[in-house]
Length: 324
Ligand code: PEP
Ligand code: MG
Image 1 (spheres, rainbow, N blue to C red):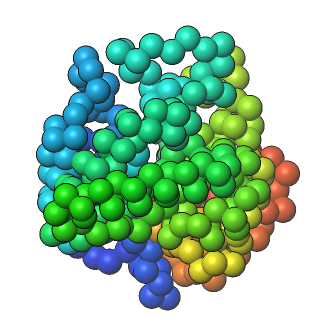
Image 2 (image 1 turned 180 degrees about the vertical axis):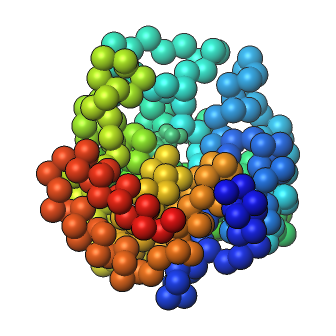
Image 3 (image 1 turned 30 degrees about the vertical axis):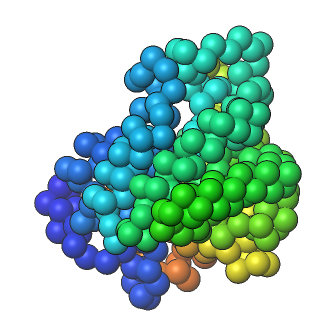
């Protein structure tokens, strides 16, 4: 299988009927992306920025952040790199920014923190914009959005940082901006969110956790965590419908995107691109190249009749077996 997969490295990620599904990398570490994935991928679909914040003992300044973002933008240019603004809180605490919450996953997380502390957000956005000067492959992604107000506020701050930099003489451009759909409320407001931004990216890890009310790191309930739960599939359909109204593309960047079983469903739904860990790229590409869109739609149609995740999984295992 390994040599069969290796043979796919330089082949396009397209279905048997010629439909391209770009595959992007998830990473938070330039050194991790380097060995595998620059040639194989269409770029970075999710650059998690938490790491440089976690390994320090104070907030990194604009210049330190900028050189970090510049490295990944340069490494992948001209391929797009989607840099997500800071998503601390929940399962990603910062040692120097203590938070004591009874329910961290329902608490101060992601965009909620950075909008409450706009200097953190502005410093990061300035660093990201400056890092992209002359490269033109940047996209910005906003995590944990649950209201349109958060998007409006974040856009205002991004525009402010952009104006400031222009006034200071930097030749910065405003990049495409997208939001993560990972909170159930955002699913139901997809259309209003899509109107405000350039693209949507579905975080199926958090979305599944919040839809099913399951912390997958809790051994007592982990068995209930399943991305093939019919509720998750219906949420994905609703996200695509909302995005379509405004002609926005939808990417999936949670773990589900890297699961070859899920490829049938995501292709069938018409997801535009997938972003995953480097280790999943070729396995997913293999499924994409083995099936047509019509086949994926057929599998999806049957999957949507299933009433639980186990039946969906059985169906997908049969489908993948047929692929060989
Ligand atoms: C997700 O929630 O699916 C996601 C991609 O974000 P993270 O895993 O970084 O929370
Ligand atoms: Mg998330």
